[in-house]
Length: 349
Image (cartoon, helix red, strand yellow):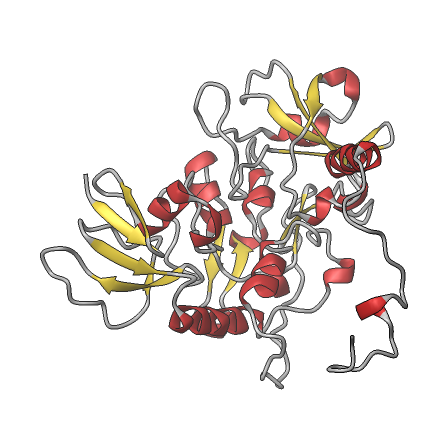
């Protein structure tokens, strides 16, 4: 098995593994971000360049470095390869440039976007982008088109990751949408004003990393951090039936697929990708339609976890331990010793 070192962490991986997949096997901060790659979709990746890394050593047989950053989602691991991600200032600077390009035409409408709070582009810009943009020209704009009664398209927010196109290609019968035109006028559109209506079309909402494709039945109903996600399932003849219900009070505001730690659709108990059909997503929005499994686990780094049951439970346990614990050291108040605001450096006795 090839051996690869990523940010000074060495791991053995199967033949044919990409650098991104190897980094995900390690986990943690060494995992490059990805906006277009989706492990459940064949041929995805290679479009956004956010997952670029520096190959410091090509392999044990040929230790020469690759002269420029490479897309980790499309570069296979070689035995003895040495890769730099967060330990390379060159990579961090290049990735910040990629983020700046992605944000050039992206509108700053997070306050009214349903994707806010679970947007991969928000996370990417905060974690890997610069504070300011140098772009001063008018942003790209597109005319709004109607692609159906369930899915809302905001082309001005699209970053052309191609995920929705690959979902339609690989999950549905008779794809009716794709990318038209070229260059800075490229856009997602349907063929001759068709609408996207097939059994699994709703999955384009879940794979979209920004707010370009959103759920019309959920629009402007609530912010995601005000909702409570619950895992549930039902016996469905079209799909796996394993979903996540998003409650506000007793009302189910929306139904989505379950997601893993990388934001991708989670595998079912049978080991297959947990895509869900439109019947489960749009037509089954009552508690009686589902068998409730329990509260869904939310990544503590997500804004959705703010003031949520898991964080509150952990806070309650911490406070309880602190109340029961004996105090350590000597209690001081402002004005004693080094805490005296009148003390000056070098004058303390």
